[in-house]
Amino acid sequence: MSDRNRGNAGDFSDRPPAIFASLPALIVDWYRKNRRRLPWRETVSPYRTLISEIMLQQTRVEAVKPYFDRFLSLFPDVAALACADDDLLYKAWEGLGYYSRARNLKKCAREIVDRFGGVIPSSYSDLLSLPGIGPYTAGAVAAFAYGEPVAAVDGNVLRVTARITAETGDVLLPAVKNRLTALVSSLVPDDAPGDFGQGLIELGALICLPNRPPKCDLCPVRALCQGYEKRIAGTLPVRGKKAERKRDRRTVLVVRSGTRTLLHKRPARGLLAGLWEFPNFSGGFSEKEALDAVRAFGLEPLRVVPLEPSKHLFTHIEWQMTGYLILVGEPDLPLPDGFVMPETEDLLSRYAIPSAFSAYTRRLREPLPRQ
Ligand code: ADE
Image (cartoon, rainbow, N blue to C red):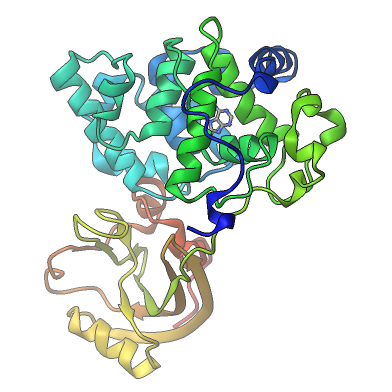
């Protein structure tokens, strides 16, 4: 391992260095005075914490806010989520992205019903045994909702602790991540595990900012921050380069017949599993290829209008899309398996279409071009 990767923040697996002894009280005190009012903090329950923490993975607080209460009113408890209708579930998640989170939440709720009598378990290890729940979420539910003295270390907390300890190793390396997690674990105060854990997250959101210089002049732990003392806080955390996304050119067909629009259900496994989509194909199709594809569905094209290109980033893939609006006659044969042609109004209100297609979904709100 290179020196850079090994880092220099010491081994915290035993006891925290004395220098950090006052950190928990400073964080807890600052959090209680400065925390934002957020929907999942107004009333705390294990279910509310579970839902909010899953929603907050890879998603900004501001983006989650409008979804949280709506989701809770549709699925008010574990039992309701365990038997959620998939289309309704995905519709409630539409726009949040990373739909496997919603699918796993339902699986998780089912297991909570089957294995824990419908009560979300309080122990870290039971939580970790549930589908879709990793170390961070298990720690968050145990600490924030049940007051268990365990750590919840996400990307925010890694950034904050890398700066506080002047950690110059790559925080994506397991050895470095484990070291920082061990430090946080050793510092969790028995009397306020939730406020400590959320305090570290809040410090990361309000003061120790990502991709921007930290606001050290406002920081409650500046006096013990090693990154501040060494004047390197703004250069941390060090993160190795992620693998480049694979580029996938696709052609999206928005096929409309009067007041109806053609949709296809994606396979049950893989990217965007089980969600609805506009029919789409690998490659950049010419108009002729697009029309041939529509004929292969048993539909008769009447008019084709090229649509604007658009792009969507998934974690590992980038879709570079071109699109065609294709007006077709009334379908006179049953549609192929997996295809439906609902009323466009219904499609917009009831079918979950991933935001990867939003440039094309938007087109459905516009009047049809004249034939
Ligand atoms: N990010 C992850 N968990 C959070 C929480 N509980 N509050 C605010 N931001 C968060």
